[in-house]
Image 1 (tube, helix red, strand yellow):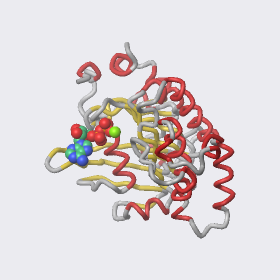
Image 2 (cartoon, helix red, strand yellow):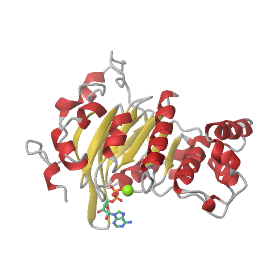
Image 3 (spheres, rainbow, N blue to C red):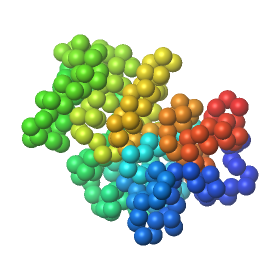
Image 4 (cartoon, protein in one colour):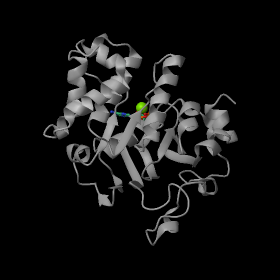
Length: 278
Ligand SMILES: Nc1ncnc2c1ncn2[C@@H]1O[C@H](COP(=O)(O)OP(=O)(O)O)[C@@H](O)[C@H]1O
Ligand SMILES: [Mg+2]
C-alpha cells in the first residue's frame, strides 16, 4: 500500500530536513531557548523524541520526532494503519512507549498517567467521536469540564459553547446518539473545549462525514486556530488538513517520511501522488 509515497532519496525514518525551514525550528536552532524571528520557533509546547511503541511484538512507530510550538496548527497525515491514532494515544498517555520521550511545556511526561496529562491541558477528541450516546448533549459537554468541575466559570463556558455551536443548544436535552455524524463531531469538539485545552488533539475529525459537513468542521478548526489554541490534527484527508495547517508531517507505516509547511507538503510531488490524487 502506498509504495509510491516512499521518497527514493529519503532513508527510512529520516525526515527531509530541507523542507523544514519555513516555520519550524530544528533543535539546533534554539540551543539558547530564545524565540527566533519566525513563527513556530522557540521552545516547543510538545516535544516528541525517538518515539517507539507497538502492539505485542509488532512495532507500530519506529522512532519518531515531532515538535509542536505554542499557537501552531500541525497536521499529521497518512494512510489507514500508518500509526496516526497510536501517536495520539502516546501523547495522551494511553499507549506505553518502548523508547523515546514525551515533553510538554518543558516537563517530561513519560511517567505521568493519562488523567495527569488531561489536567495539564492535553485534550484529545478521539477517532469516531466517542460521545456518550445515552447521555444528553449537555451532559456530554459537562463531562468535558469534569477535570475542572470546581471552577466557577464552567456555566459561562457552557453558554459560550452554545454560542459557538447553536445546534448543540437546540438539541441540548436530546441523547447524543440522536445527533448526526457532523453534530456528534461538534459535540466531541465542544466537550474537549470545555476542558480548556492547551493542546487539542483531533483524531480524524472529518472521517465519515459528507463534503459540506467536512468544510464546516475544518472551518471550526480554523476558528480555534485563530483563537490561538495549539492544535495537532490527524487526518487521512490530507488536502483539507494541510490546507489549514501551519506545518505538517507525513506518516507512513510508523515513520515520518516528509515534513514542512502545509503549503510545501500540498505541493510536494510524492505527497500529491500518494494522498492528493496526483
Ligand atoms: N489495539 C491494537 N492491537 C494490535 N494492533 C493494533 C492495535 N491498534 C492499532 N494496531 C496496529 O497498529 C498500526 C497502526 O494503527 P493506527 O495507529 O490505528 O493507524 P491509523 O490511525 O494511522 O489508521 C496498524 O498496523 C494497526 O493494525
Ligand atoms: Mg486512526
